[in-house]
Length: 543
Image (cartoon, rainbow, N blue to C red; front, side, top):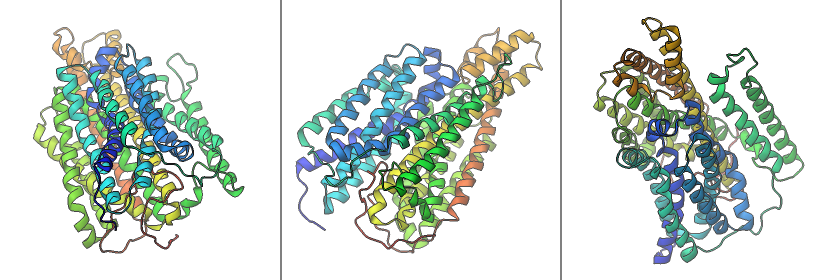
């Protein structure tokens, strides 16, 4: 390993690459605690609140591999800068949005920019640094990303409480400008001169439209109806779900045919023959689904029914990140003793226990320290499982395919995040509406007013509940909605625990890795397809 001192220019290059990605990661979580405030300010519907986050993650997941390949062809520095500019323009537009359509459109464009930033930054890191500098660069990159996951909810809560939710987007502008200055001053252009020409446009279109159809159906089912609308007309939801399934099936067929013909593919499906990737991807998707779904739904409960401010919500969610940080530092020696699979399973088991415990203790009088303790345990589980999952999944993959495998893994994780918002967010809101209707049926409110309250609560995802409770004329309805939100949250977190059990079960099929020292793996989200990200070679093991 090289012992050449790291130059000041290299340090600045590391920080420049980490800064852009930190903004992408922060925007996955910073908005969540401000959702009730945004709903109230812009009049967002509950579906609009879900789409605000899901569209960002969906675009990031769908275009990650294609953007990475584009950077390999035309230059990663160029793609990184272009993605950052696009991200900043979209952030400016999101902060200035006057309605939910403008906000969702801006988040769509943000996702496009984010999909360019992540693989370009990581590929530049991978191509620029060697030896000791390379290990330090990946450590800085990973630590910065992890830090932004923690800072996001707290910063979003503080801005929504003390200033305006709009700064949750505008804050990207000064830091984005700093990153652009760094790109111009200290980053060198890199590209892959040996890359095969061509792009897999059919695969890109089929996968993006297919995923979009599935996510649309999951989010909009509670509004259009799963089969028929309230008017009696057929709902578009079953058609969207069916079309999404057909397009995704066609994507698999097309990718297999292109691979046999020797054409460029978006995803090398032959990698699925490796058990570690096949079953590990399921576990990774489930972990992301549970974590992002929880971070989306928990603030709605805390602010809608338990009386927390956005800042107070951010402080509570911070305990999840603290648990993750502490576990990440303690995991390597534990892995040497127990092995990767055991540590992953312990981590997932802790997640299940924490989420199931949350479902049991949620009540009107639950204390903040109890919620904080459960989130801390959940964070410890996330830190243990996530820290080792990528390395364990790639244990079977030949070095020459590790870049594509890690890029596919990141895509799966982002898809899991989008599905977490769609599935758990949709479950929370639909259950909230049904429970509110049941609770109001036992009151003296006229049927027309009951329907009006249910619609208000459902369309605001519960954000209107505090207003209903404070008004003497609607206090009884507000208390009914408050109790319904607690019940809906208990059901949603219970389902999340069951889903995590499925992820735990998937790890049982993963091949065992040898117990012993674990080499640090530089593979990380967004690795460019076709470029190795591991420095050591290993014989492939299939199953």
